[in-house]
Image (cartoon, rainbow, N blue to C red; front, side):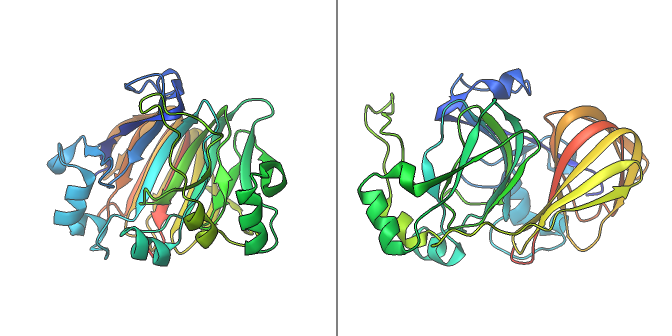
Length: 321
């Protein structure tokens, strides 16, 4: 498949969701409580659909299962990555995700290491990112006693910020924030605290997972050290945010002109256009791209050129993916 594989996203309604996925990206969201756009997804809870080419109409998980050559014959039972856009009209629950070993044993799927690129943030917006407990016993005690102000660590964020969230990190996206999330393809979330909210559909508080959360949380919390690198590729400013065993994540920013990229070690590349419009050229064929478009560059695409005014987040599978 020597062309970009464009994808139709899936939308998830959430108790904390809003309407910015429509107002900012013109997506056909199901309601004004839409929290998540699963943009590049082969997860069974919301697989994206291919919109062009020989696999048009198939879901990404079907292409992964039946045409592994598209992905350079990459190994693994499941497509390893999931790209989302999240719109937090209200605070998300305080949560933590397990690593691969715990998730595979207890949930039957991958663990969840993720990262966020902040697209928008209200003045004074904050993330919950980490905690202050020094021991697992102190963690359990603070959770049991509901001492959230003492336990939880809050960090201010602004558009353009990047946060890496390894499995075992207590976290929550705060209200008034939109992010592009790159993560392992997992839907396992352990809720530590949900602000005592009641789900209007069920009339009940959402389930908490206290023991699992205590089991999997990293204690003490240590901020991961990021080796952020900047370089020029043609006319594009390229920033490498993170390179890990799970994924690598890059920002391509182009203000006119063009940039030609050559595939290196990764067998395929996930691409999300966050701002602007332009073209991507593969094998002398040009494809229009604009804000809100998501696609995969398959294994057979060894080189591509982008033109226009564009801000893009791209990701690639890591060694463990």
